[in-house]
Image 1 (tube, rainbow, N blue to C red):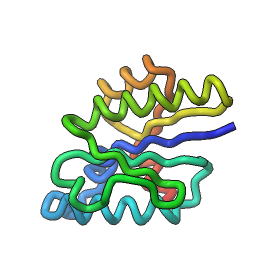
Image 2: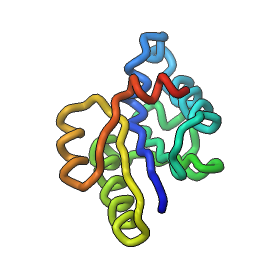
Image 3: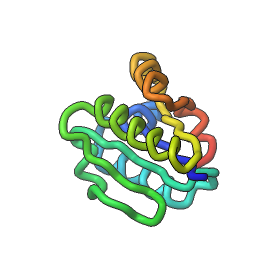
Image 4: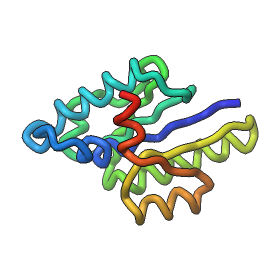
Amino acid sequence: MTSTLIVDGANVVGARPDGWWKDRAGAALRLHDQLLVADIEYDVVVLVLEGQAKGGVRAGRDAHVRTVHAPKDGDTTIVEEARKAVEKAAVKGGRVVVVTADRALDARVHGAGATTLSPTWLLSHL
């Protein structure tokens, strides 16, 4: 059984008023590094980055964290990642959770078969 956590990087970074808007790439790197050592119960973590944040972390896998660069908008990429993970979970068993506070995205990922948690939940575990 595999559990997958998909992180809406822009939404999570935006939940902390720490000056992230001055250095989006740096904020993405800090989030990535925190996810690498976070005490969370997920086998796979997918960090989706868009725009300037993509400059902070290369696309690819680092341990259990896979970073995905959205070619256009992050929401579409997050929904695609959720659909793929739900398909795998249907075969192998498991769960897929997306971290976002975006209500429209929440509805889309629920439609894909995933559930959601808030950025506050994730930030409390970092």
